[in-house]
Length: 72
Image 1 (cartoon, helix red, strand yellow):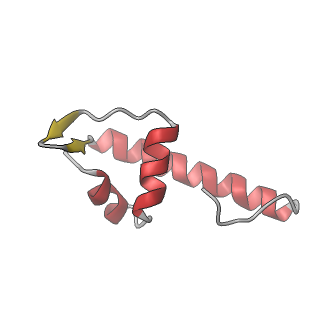
Image 2 (cartoon, rainbow, N blue to C red):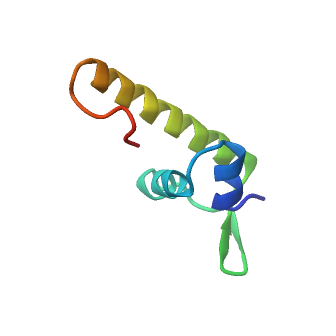
């Protein structure tokens, strides 16, 4: 089981971006360890996929002159 901090380290993303995706996409924890949310490997894969999709969309928007490429 993985915390959001461990997920951020494994996918080499800032913690705030992982936290944002979890909240914005409604990704539920698989359980709790004390007061920490814990997530499965499949949640890690979904979070990584959502971040990659967000980055692709930002890059496309930047190429079209519609926004900043570093927004999540």
